[in-house]
Length: 396
Image (cartoon, rainbow, N blue to C red):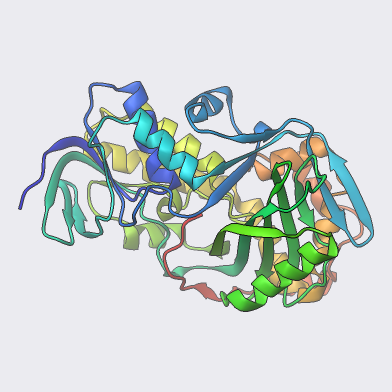
């Protein structure tokens, strides 16, 4: 069977693919774009958050159609020996609101869901049911691939959306509450007050394995909520296992992922923050870059974005170095000290860190002073590789 031909087909309707569709449709209203998602809705079941300073004015403009919860009063962090309020405004997007915005903003028929892809090539995609969608340009945004060419650790989490029985009293997000017991790795709880009687509570771990015990994490969220006197009804839940990339060979990874003439985007194209696993700022930047060059021939667009990916890898080497020391030099229960020390640094440095825009002065400031891990172990960690990231496809 043959479907309708189009100017651009985007494989994968997660954050990266959806933003590309939104950016291209906005900048090139005459182009026909198809967004093909294997699941029942674009965006899946997820929540993405970002500091306002992570995005350029153009990036904020791209996200305007999407409903966002915004905390202009800033955010806070809590550690065993240190707590702090930070002034940076914070924003969060639910995947349901992202999907609703795409449905409103994209032309009717542009989104195809429940459509797993069997194969793709530079001329289009073939769905599992045999339908063929021919396209002048193909974007592959289906998530990261398992690869022996990347190594590192894991960020594992469970998030619970809760309607509380009484107002919870929080006025700003708690980005990290690391005063909790450190169990199996660096652990913190992340809390978003989405409304006076609505909370999102996420239990997160930087750990050496991708293991996620849903029952155990759920019980720990129960205990955390009980400790703070929050009771209520669960209205949503999500889990995630994300790679934390500490090193590898990006050219070899891209060679394995590459299909001639197909543009790689999102985590599949390595457009992530290698330490925090943040994707939203980089997905926005990639979407804007693809929209700016959407009229290029397919092979030229693919080559341009691959060069951009390698440039991103080079620019984020500092964060992989820190990740190597985090996993290789610090005992799991002691990793909290690294983050506690980091959150004593000047706030503009912290903002640039999360945006992936740390300056040379920032890097020096992070590394100087009393090291949070033993020097010998740090040097040993830098001289060895972490295990390969042979993970299943994930959406960040």
